[in-house]
Amino acid sequence: MATPHSGEMAKFLRMDKKEIEADPVAAALSAARMLDAVVAMKGGRTHVVSPEGEELCLEQGPIALGTSGSGDVLAGIIAGLAARGAPPLVADAWAVLLHGKAGRRWVKRNGQLGLLAREIPADIPRLVQSVGELSVQSPGGRSISE
Image (tube, rainbow, N blue to C red; front, side, top):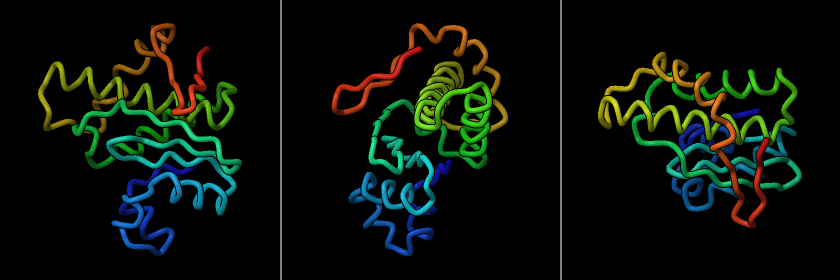
């Protein structure tokens, strides 16, 4: 599992950040195959990509999530879901969805700026309880649900 943003991916792949941003799915697929792991390429759209080429696109996160430590929280959510038995692609996709929804809830309460990563986990248990409301769909129409 890896959760890079374009700057981190550029360093990892030894490419220019603009190249990564021009084709984030290709970058994520390259990294996924190199690592033999699912990669969540974070950005305005987060692309969750498996080494086999499966790809899900999620547009869940507000700009407030672009704060130090937010990716660490995302990684923790992924690890928690994987520990409960979710396959890697599913764990990553649900974690991105939950992380983004928690971010949107925070923004509704507080505005666009000032989120601290430590504030994200508070909403996760309630969001997991409402999992029936959530869905993840790939550009090709593939959906993930419980």
